Every structure is written in C-alpha cells, then in structure tokens.
Amino acid sequence: NVHAAALTQVHRFDEATSAFAGDVIGNLSRHPKRLSPKYFYDAAGSELFEQITVLPEYYPTRTELGILRSRGDEIAAIIPKGAALVEFGAGATTKVRLLLERCEFGAYVPVDISGDFLNAQADALRSDFPDLAVYPVAADFTAPFALPAEISGLPKVGFFPGSTLGNFEPHEASAFLRSAREILGQGAQMIIGVDLEKNERVLYDAYNDAAGVTARFNLNVLVRINRELGGNFDISGFMHRSTYNRERHRIEMHLIAKKAQSVRILGQNFSFRPGESIHTESSYKYSLERFTALARQSGWSVRESWTDAERMFSVHALVA
Ligand code: AVJ
Image (cartoon, rainbow, N blue to C red; front, side, top):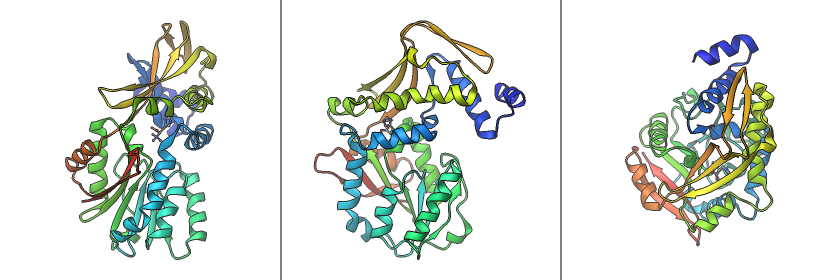
C-alpha cells in the first residue's frame, strides 16, 4: 500500500498504526465510505463495549452467558478430558471461565491481536486454574496462525463466542470457519455463539440504547482516528445511526454527517455531503437453518445446538 508506506516514513508509526492508517485512508476514499469494526476496540472502545454488554436493551451477552451456564453439563459431556481449548479473539474471560469451570481442559490457548491484555489475562487464569496450561498466542485470528507445539498431541476444541462471526460478511464467515477447521485439524470440535434473527424492534433497540452508549461506542472510532492518526474530525458533526437491513439479515451501524464538512487525516482531505454515511459495522443475524448450512459448506457439521427459551441467541457444538 503506497499510502501506508509513505505515511510510515513521515510519521514513524508502529506497524499496527500504519496498517490502521492505510486502512482508514483507503476505506474513507471509497464510495460509500466505510470503516472496519475491528478499530472500535481501543481502551475507551473496549470499556464502552463492556458497558454495552450490561445494557437492558443489549440481550446477546447475558443470553449467551445464560446458555453457557444452563447447558454447561451438556457441553462438558462432549468435551474429551484433557483437550486444548483454542479461543479465537480473547476479550473478557467471563465466558471462557464458564467452560473452564465445567469441563476438564488440559490447556487453554487464547489468540488475540492485542498482546498486553492477553498476557495479563493468561496470568489471572493460571492462578485461578493451577492445573491448566495457558499458552497465549498474539496473532490476528482472522489470518492463519500456528498453534503452540505443546498442544500438538491434545484433542482440540475451538471457542468463538459473542456472535463475533456476525461481523463477517457471509463469504468471510465461511472463510473463517474453513480456516479454523484447518488450524484445529481433523476431529476437532468448535463451540460457537451466534445471534439469531428476531423481532426487528428488539434488534433495533439493542443497537439504539436509550442511554446512548452504543452511539458513543460508534463515534469513538472518530476520536481514535483524531488521536492516533492526527485527524481533525468534529465529533459533534456526526451522529450514530443503526438500522436493521431485513433483506441482508443484518444490523448496520453508520456515522452520518450532520452537515457538509471536510476532514483532514494525514495530509488528505475527505469531504462529506450532508447526510453522507460512514458504514462502521454490520452485525449479521442467522436463523438456525442458515447457520447450519454455513457450517456445512465450511467443513463442519453441527453436533448440537442450544438456544434460550425465547430463541434470542444460539450456541453450537460443531465437529470437523
Ligand atoms: C461484538 C460484534 C458481537 O455485533 O452485537 C455491539 C458489537 N456493536 N453493539 C455486535 C456491537 C454495537 C457486537 N459484536
């Protein structure tokens, strides 16, 4: 990427920041403009997301936790003793702790791009689960990575909670599942959390909370661009918009320019028409049938599916 290379020299950015710079400039140069949801999670964004997970309107986190708690015995029953649990993208440890408490895993491999957080979590888990070997891997889990040699002899179980799969376009979701199947190997299993299609009002409210936390979470990506890339976004010139796209089965989050304006980032100007949007996130919702078909065409079969009584969220055990 020519932009990124030139920018690296002028600003002496680290590798991650130049990748961020190249991606932002490329995606704001497109029509329609967009930004990747992976950039939401700086320190402030991660804190805002934690606040989202406990909002009354945001049902996914508490519903998935409820399923993992109430179906813990059934999940434990299909996990081989001493297996290695490989978590794709390791944020808060609340969910994985539910599995570690209920199943007899021999090793835990959290994989995440943010290395600092990863090591702090690994230490906390080592002290709470003294018999568990923890091997953190600092890597982008959406690209192929190598598992630690220490777990080569162990049965593998992948863990991908939170409906993070929903952030991928359908073809990317399929590519991710295939790649996970490749990384985990023959005979592996995978525990995956997937948000379900439901009443549109419920979906709308979950991404338009009354307290405005989701709006701040969305707008924070502009704050981050200002801070890390020296941008000059007027944050008050943009507003949060989330809508449900029924044809595409997805929530779309946008940042809408309230008026005509121009923003300068790393020596480049980006102009906005009044009402112009930056598409910041898609959150795909699945039916059980569509998820089962996706898993099948991606090298897995669905061994068991669990949902809550209201069929808001689903957790699946896949086998390779
Ligand atoms: C972390 C991607 C599952 O799509 O619900 C929450 C992120 N965005 N509110 C989701 C999110 C706005 C969340 N995922």
